Length: 432
Image (cartoon, rainbow, N blue to C red; front, side, top):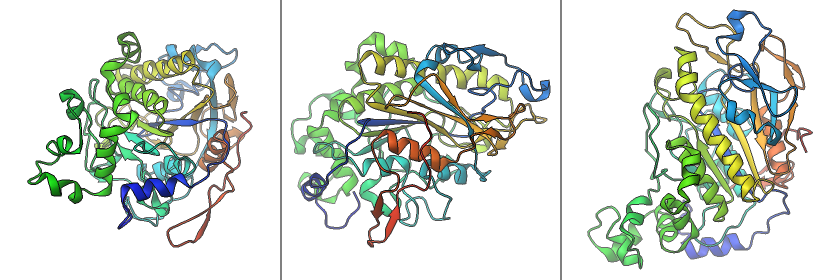
């Protein structure tokens, strides 16, 4: 929570007085593929390019005539009628941290530490500003961990100049086979499973005996930071507590998502927005790139086996399940789903059988939230090396998301020093 002297009741009273604008979508799920998903091996295959560029995989038809995906996205291909693919995004940042920052904030990096108030707020933080959920329900949640690159936590996932009260709360996904690789937990992440399994939370005193091996129950709650107080109140009275318990989900639905942390995270995202959390951000890969090893999209080596055997199957199944689930529940029109990544991958395959960083052009996607599916905006050239039509920036991607949520991208917000900032510099894409 982070504002000195601000108690939880005072915080909820203050946020209740904020008037949120009308919106089309009621909630947003952000799916981030950390490391840089290859556009060639996902949404923008190049079957007519030379062999050294098009790679080992074939392309397949989708449910939408004229739109083709990589052959290893067969389930998602059936949902093309729900997806708006953008094939012409580009920026100038070749490092993971700076690329993630521009995609998550819509602005160029400022070189500040991860939780500095000099940073721009993340997309999740900015969207959450316009929502006022019920007491005990966070404005925004991210899971299952923060983004790291070779041991360093990255900027771009927090509240920035909006203040730490707009930091999305970090939650651990309680089920599923973990991603292979280094997964770091340095934030005070919220792990509700311990308490849920014991199924005996009756009051604050009971909860306190389970927190931090506190020496004194009477003083433990006062010693907790605002973040942990929010966690305690969520456990005691919020619908989030029940949403987090994946054991309560229909086993057939759980199976549909897949028994992997990726699938179970997206299932949890659906349950959280259904429980009233306005914005949920899900990291769909291992959290520390660690030189490209492990289950992340930084495929500098063994690109094709890694994509075929691990990354694309989890992505294909879990995202397809999310779209199916949202549609079955009548939630897709009121839930914006946006897919983000660092950048694309290089046209040439390197000597290690990998593709390297490539911000010159890459693909992103939207679904739901009033976005018209079954369409492609923009295009890369025949070799997939640069935009050929409809070139757009991460700021335009953000502006489109804000519009879907009924938020004017030109809205002026103020930081904690009352300095004015325009929410977004981009222009919405014609996807509605």
